[in-house]
Length: 244
Image (tube, rainbow, N blue to C red; front, side, top):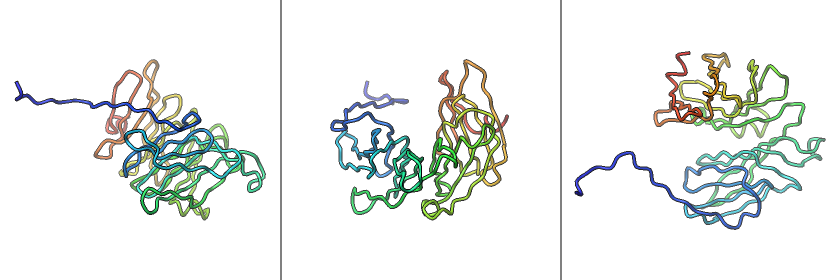
C-alpha cells in the first residue's frame, strides 16, 4: 500500500569486463571507488563500477604471475612471481611489488621486494589497517613453522621489516586478518583457525572444525570484529572464536 518498509534487501548487478586478454588472477575493491583486476601475466587494470577499463599497467618482466592484490587508499600491493633471475640468481622468485596512486587515477611502481626460495614461499599477504603495515605469511621453511613479517611499505623496500615464526603443524595459510585488539587470525586451507597475539606471536585460541563443518572465509565487521564463515552458511564473530 506504499506505507511499508523494506528490510534486508540486497541489490545485485552484473557487468562484463571487456578488453582483458587473459584469465583474471585477483580482484580487489578500491577504497577510492571501482576495482583493481590482475590477469595471470602481470597486467593490472582499474575498472569502474560499470565494467569499463580506466587504466592498465604492465609489470616490466619477461614473465610475471599475479597471485594476489591488496589495495589501500594510497597504495596497491602486488604478490606473485616474476622472472628476475639477474637480481636473485634464480628463476621465478616470490615478489612483493608496491605501487602508489598519484594525480587522478594514475599508478606508478615505487619498488619491489624479491624473495629467493631459501627464504620460503609467500602464502598470503594482508594489509593491517590498524597498524598500517603489510603482513606477509611465509611457508616452506619447514613443516612445523610458518614465518610472519610485518612493516610499512618503506620497511619492506629497505629490508627493515620485522620477522617472527609461529609453530604451525597445519596446512598452508589461506587468509590472515588482524584486528585493533592486536589479534592476528590465521585461517588454513584445511579450515583450521588460530588467533595469535600480534605483538608476541603467542597463540590465544585455536579451533579445528570437524567435517563437514569447515571454515572457509573471514573478514571484518563494521566494529572491527572478525567474522568467520563456514561451508554450511554459518557466521561466527570473534567473541565466539576467542571463547575456545
